[in-house]
Image (cartoon, rainbow, N blue to C red; front, side, top):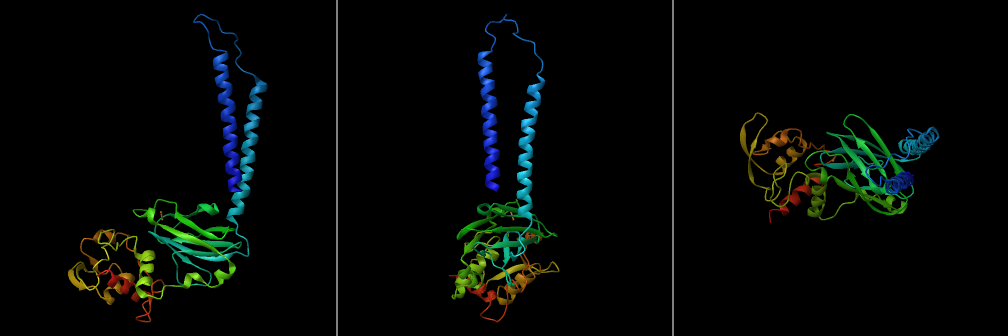
Length: 306
Ligand code: CUA
């Protein structure tokens, strides 16, 4: 329906552009003044029939566009009652996607083919916009308000999910994927899988959770790089504004995830102004020790020291 209306608008515009500029060009050549003293051939100022016609035709076209768009808009805003229910939380600069019945977020989305999917969205900070061009759906995501979007994917494949609202420095990195899979593959809950190797698992989590603010190659972003940081001594500003030295160990990493404002690395104080992401223990669990997401991230940090 989106494509139909879009191409209708394009072709109506092309038709009238060609018609009007064609008549204009033809008349300017055919009826041009051929010598400087040639008198005007006519002094007609208006033609009621013509004016009524060129008012009624566009008015009718506009009503067609209105009715067509109105119908599409209604269909896009009311999800079918049997739709699968997803939750998405947007924040600078990633998507937390909660699959039906799942309490831990994933960075990418899996949906079964030929099944309506309804997503309830909100934002932790600023305006974002959920945009999957292949599905022709786009909806602003706002802090303090739930926004609904729905779609039914009809072709198995992987599609891009963009943030379509400029939301700050790393807006352009706020990307994800929607995997459309068969019902069988969907039932295997692919979003719950993670690599067996803790370093690889940590790398996946890093890509999802940390990458937008912390590089793994030594270059500073919003926050300090992760390269070589594990086990190092860092000067930090504590919550009383005192400068102290900490060792980057499990406790410090843990605290920086759940209470990032407590000890801020020197030189990155500006990140305090609304930029630092606070994670919950549901998002990055810290137990069981040695087998949880926190420890996978730490194994990844250790691997960056080599
Ligand atoms: Cu989020 Cu742009």
